[in-house]
Length: 416
Image (tube, rainbow, N blue to C red; front, side, top):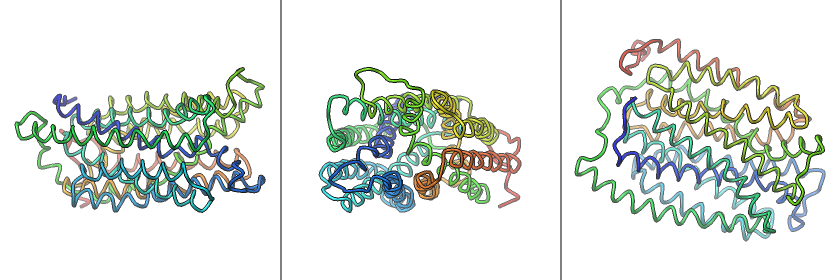
């Protein structure tokens, strides 16, 4: 495994903090969705609250995916560094809009804006990391990036539970979320300027070699299909995760005195999602240019029985099923992001990441709507388990195309 220079490692960790925050924003509505749809100011009919929650989640996630393509093009055109600052300031403003939203229509609009600004992060942030790393150390760099991302996914429910445990409302939760975006933007601007000075002095990793300009488009487009299905599973499960665990608590007759149910279910969701850190680390640690495809297939097939278990689980079994699913599922992310860099040329890196996340998060945005309208958890999670099988199968196809390779080179020249 190639080592990163200290300067590059510091840049990777700071950009990864931006990754953590984008997932706090992405899942912020999922942590408070039951409180939002029960808010009397929106006058939502009780029998349709879950359905409305699903469409609100869709409204946040759709631009989170669809705008990523434009964000990738802009990052290649104007620089990923500038786009990251736009993302941070824009999300802070959108969070203030959610704090103030007096009507359901403005709630939809503010969620859409939050998703649009958050969509900038992945093509800009991952593109920036991929350009400052080499094939040998990129999986580990993206593993660190994924670890902070999983920490952010878990931090959202923890933060929501903590804020509400102190008697705050869901609106005040969004007011709190407006603060870290501004602070992180200031830190990032300072650090990026310092990193440019170190680059000029030659104290950072050298650029990747000429093989990084190779393009393997059939593999890339197959990878996009894989990302779309994995993104659908991701969004469908995570949007309703606190609700799913809350049902398990009630069925088991468990309760913790002094902790409101809306806080407790978020704490449990946070614990489950924090386990994703283990998967991110495993994927980054095990990943090599020659083993990305078979590892992704192995983790996808390993996560499939967990999703199927979620379809049948009752009571506390729901907690165990999701706790096992989390590290197995999230292990694919550093592998997947390394594969994008493996298949596309450097000059189109951010754009290709943008298209990847447009499909992954854009098609995935319909996951909450799907889960919200399905008649039962049995139907919902059985269908999602089937999709995970397809994800694993497509990874095997990519492994068949590339096969054993030497020194990180690709074996698909004949195809292109």
